[in-house]
Length: 350
Image (tube, rainbow, N blue to C red; front, side, top):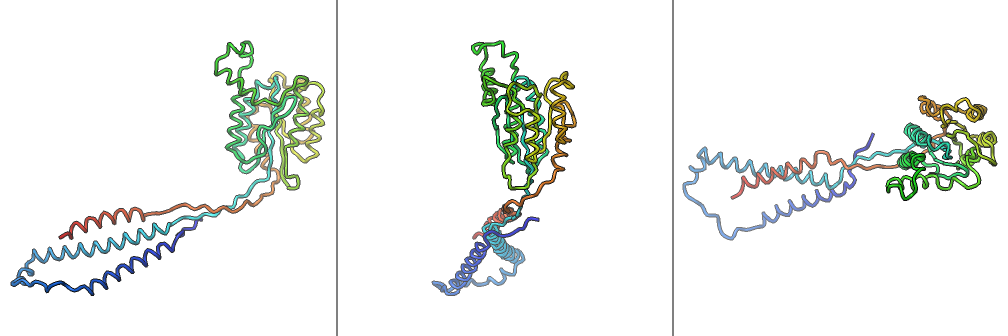
């Protein structure tokens, strides 16, 4: 529970001391004052002071004087309380999960029509995590790290959304147009796609799935720390020529580094059961990883459950003290008291 405290209690003490000293000085000076002339006595006033109307007026006048003094004291107390700055302090010590997840995305030509859906699935997946570090790597013939391992979920969400918009470009429709025929919006969309896939293609090769997976395996750091490490690979397994690693060899590299491999098939549905998809499924299964197709409605829930079921050591983050100003009712007391003090001063005016 948060603790309530005065951040500057010395201010209240100092203000109270000033008020007390001022009152003492006023009283002492009032006693030492001597009237310049004797008081003027008026004859036959005793009967006047006994009149009910006069007595009521005098009592009312004194009552307003007393009320004014009480309200003034209340305003001083409220001012002192506000000046001392009442706050609520909450000390938090976050427990950081030690799970690292690399999202590994094939952005070759055969996968581009499906990558927007894959990135949307990635975004849904990350919404279920808290504290895990996440990275995104895209690849074709070479790989590019879109963002390294981070627990900044705002950045993760922005990058995944921007990537989904970039790869959602209708390349078939725009492929029939020249640059001069494209609108400014279409040119901007093409530029976004080129930016997102920059550094992933070469003139010689494409779709080097095993090489992309091997690169994703190199994204993990803190090798001396006991951490849960996972890769979610999304590809159609349409392999180009001359890869350094085959998919199976890359999967062996992943396993040797104690990394869990999850497979997500993102190709056309009519290719499910074909040679490429079957080989992909077999490689993931051989390393005890979960395998899904893009249209599997239970993919996100199953992935989250399996990742969170993995053993993870919690690390204590530095304690953080959060101060929140809680003036409470003192502002209202001060405002109401000021209004009443003005009213009392008006009623006792000469």
